[in-house]
Image (cartoon, rainbow, N blue to C red):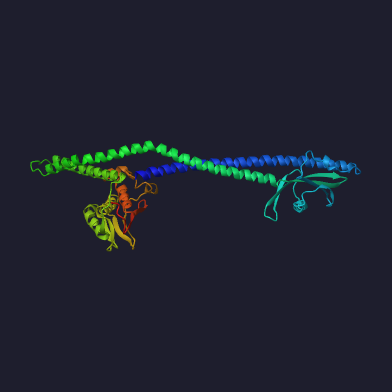
Length: 434
């Protein structure tokens, strides 16, 4: 139990820390990627717009002086073999050009033929080549007019290498992020383990104190109980007031003895001192025997105890602990079922490898929020009513511990105001731990 609680807490802390780091690294990689994309795209767009303006200026100069040669070297501010331009009039006639690579020129001409982008806007077009690799081209246009005839300058640049480089950088960042996440998760696991050490130490001291106190209290409580019984049977005590006091003392000692016994069971389970004494047990007989034991208590509240589908069913179990488990569930049902209610003990299934039985009541029910904590130690749904009924919040925790010792499973179905159903599933054969 102890190792499970602290191990689960450590895993939860590690998972929470890892989740925070994952979100942080993901956001950081996304921001870096978008920043690189914006930086590269804006720089390439600026270069295209400058080149488009230069080409348009050169074309205007040529329109004014038709005999002057169109010198491409004056168009570019810097030499770049990936830049290209085409000047086309409104009739589709190609006036001047600096051709793109023959590999992508058909793609460029297709883009120009379907151009519907406003002048000055920059767009990125992409198309897979024959090998499936994506080619990316950034293009813009610049409109000029000569003697009423519109001419359009189309300027573009092959940015495939730039985008591929940016993509590889993003992949590298992702790999670095994964490595950072793994390292931070490992460090988080180590740090969470160190943080739990003081809690584990305090828990161990508390557990040891509970075990020692429970063991030491059993003898004085037995003495007080015996003294109360002796005084109640003393014929010399005739006063009704004194008899009532002695009965109250006996009842409170009984409650205290049960609490001490439960605490000792819990302490032993934490120390893994609880062992199973496995033997063949007939389950239906145990269920019927417990119902008979609880019948007087149920009759006081006019509660109907009913058994359904109880057929002979043998399994390998610790008879004493199985008896305690059934008693806890039935007693719990009687406590929280109002007068005139009904409790049904049913054999749900009897298979070759496992058996299931349930204890269902028509009591107050358990809310969904409380169902998650109902098997926690000292947890009580209604603390005030639990005190009145003698509950200490350990019964269901012990029941779960007994089921776990038998390698079984316990669950519940409940609805407020309609009752609760506890379902226990046990293996027919289990290996002895003793």
